[in-house]
Image (tube, rainbow, N blue to C red; front, top):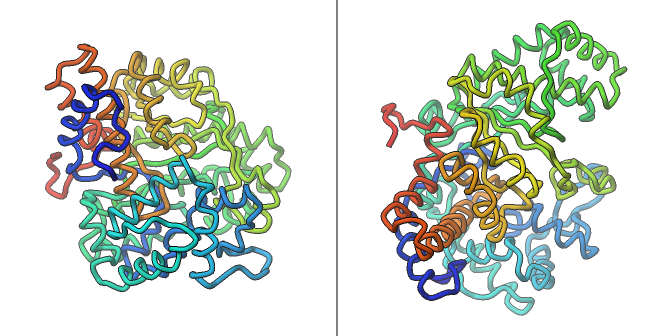
Length: 470
């Protein structure tokens, strides 16, 4: 990045932002929520060709091109129906370069170009006439042992990386990482408990997954969930994550919850049953968090698979999801009535609905000791979105009811870039407070190190192997 990239344009404020950024830029990275495949680090094999590293798994990239009529299979995204998808990495790369102008002004372009320069040391701008040169330079780097996953992990200064797994996952990759000294409690790569696929009645295949889960009754289901949480904790987990369509919570009588579960097993549950059950299960998961200490994360508000044609051809998580308005104040009240002031409970709230930051989320974080605000996520994980977040929530929630930055990425090489963007935006925001004489410079310097490093460690209960928090 340019040394002043993303800093305020006013010379006086920019100078302060530069100074504040220097306090944060070299701090270790805490990545408490993301979707990197842990097998990448467990196996430590060379990355595949540049297209399969940078294009194929990145639904930010494939989604933009799909919006311009370029189907994902031409970019190498596998199909579910057996129809062919492009397999030649250079062909995929040339197609990206041909349409690179579509990404002007987007965070995808900022992240990707920064990966080229900051991670791989390639300064050649991507254009149709330079596509092969950039591809060849990337391929040469990927063949170098210095660019294998664990070597990059070290170079990125990652202190901890949390991945995300289903209760059905056997955690084999994490077992291997622990055997190699990389995983387990206090390890460098840890897991996160994500039970959505065994909670959502209307997620296709739910009954089959419950059969694999090995339960036939609601009581067995709760016991198995508690058991799996313990296995995840043994693999280093410090948090759970829940990606429901809404933030609704509901404390049902156990008999009613059992009746819903039985109805779903019979294939007789409807959409209303599904919403009531997942709302109830959020309360049950909060109860489990009080018991076992996992920090609870809630990522609501995505209408999954809105593009049904894309879903039927390529499956989930390929760019077919759309944000939806989300309410929190009434939706979370049943959960917060039970656990909002319990010192053993902690919940980190995210949103895809920016209108909720000032109106609902910041006041909730300012009113309940158990509530923290998660960083802007997904469609809002942009320089402007991060800036608007600070402007929206600081008045009510301050800085210390927020949980630090999460990169929420599947793209391993983009992790340091995304964190650097967040640190630059926070430096600019704090610099403006200093320039307006609303915050002393020394306190701003302390705040930016807290936002970048100390807060996420504290909120997500991250400790090093000695048990002493840095």
